[in-house]
Length: 298
Image 1 (cartoon, rainbow, N blue to C red):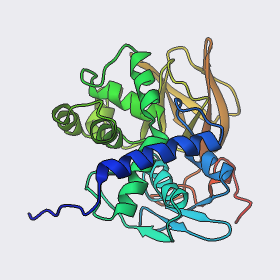
Image 2 (tube, rainbow, N blue to C red):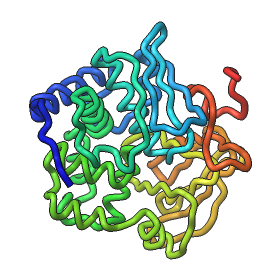
Image 3 (tube, one colour):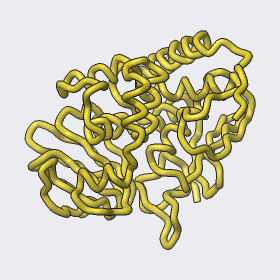
Image 4 (cartoon, rainbow, N blue to C red):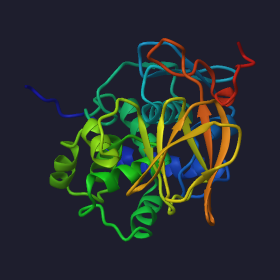
């Protein structure tokens, strides 16, 4: 297969994207370490985000106000990454754009410098290098030696996909060798869930532990959540206890809303979005209303 050499300086654009990501976090009064809610960041910056039943990754619509449209058909972590990518178009003053479906965020090198810039911005705004270093060190792990399940836990902390984290660690921040990244890439989401849960399941899984720094965790109905041992849930039945496992306590998200889960001095607010009945996709509507039973925008 013939490859083409890009006509732009990737290293210079990557540096520009990293600096813009740090400046964007600072503008929204967010630190440069912890995981963020990308939808909350967009709201702070005055960018409206809407989930739609569309067969694409997402779209940036320049205007007053600027809007980001995301596909509700994509997995939850992918939606967050796509939102960060579209926000990159906004931050860099790009015109309206449509991003077609692709297999993996950053898996194929961009030949368009604007797309490369937006993609690299997404990686840095969601996964700043200081935050990644903290996430590994606080657990006593290193990127080169972690197991796939441990790497998946880090991905869940930053709200991104397993493969997206691997690509960013190896190609974005040089914390993971290409060889080790390739080996970890061979582990499929299906086999990861099988290893962690001890059983085959089609439902998406989120894993968190007591080292998770973010005060909130986004999920949607039917998502499985493996939370720390001894976790108890407050609220009106949003999370249903499934069973205790060696790695923690397994719950299933069954009802939209915001519910607190706590284990000793550790706690997190789980924000659950609805999914479409009898359809293979999630919440449709404005991102700011995604945890409500009904979207006021409808």
